[in-house]
Image (cartoon, rainbow, N blue to C red; front, side):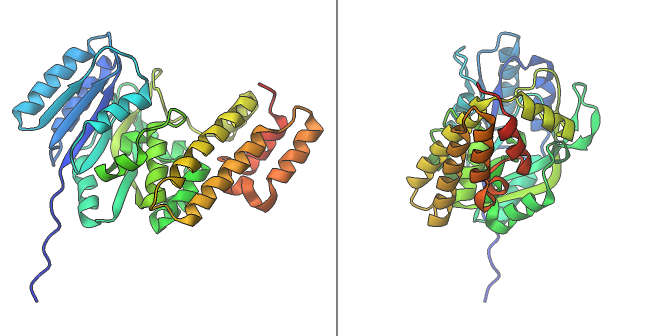
Length: 334
């Protein structure tokens, strides 16, 4: 018997979105062009920048094209928002694997190579995401990682890598787009990206519903924290969590219910989703609707929360578990 053939090399596309990112774009662009394994294509979608970002993009794409990288610039001056902008960039990529990029981070030299090796080694892998090193506006290390700041427990990472990621993401998103890569085959299943969800959490939970997801503790991105982050990584101390709990209103539960229905409906229309996953999505939607319908009167809320807690549903479906029970009791009307 002959030796097994090595896995076929996959093409990689970078989907990078920008909006008034001039202060940090050059550093991110340099890190992409310094990869040990270069991308095959780069798509940059700008969301109506007015600060010189477009000029930096054009210079960067010119340099990339000189290296033989296929490039595409998308920018018509229209503000779409984060998720629609990423949807546009992703849809415009044609590579086997799409690697997402924020405008203000810095990639380590092996970020792209490590991602591609994972997909080439495992043909069944659909999406992967990683940890990241948190840095300040000047790029100085903050002494903690993304997973530490978000309080992502090892048990959740283990569940995802054992093929039980859907339940973990159903409870709480732990996938950050700046560390994410996925096979392009995922996008037709996830599109259109719903307005009720952020692009990274939607891609992760759909991927976990239909295929295998991998999460690693690798820190291959410096994830910059500054005053203009659209989505950052505040440290989730108990004080922070309590403050968030007390400042939210019933409108939060209504939004969670709407999101859950969108997910359950979409998964119900995908043939490859198992009955077990569909049932979990419907159960999550039912749970969130019960939370959204809690009455204003405190005694009625307590009774409703106790009913919603049956079967350990707060532990299964609420991002903060038992703390969310307290949130629902104390929550004020919208």
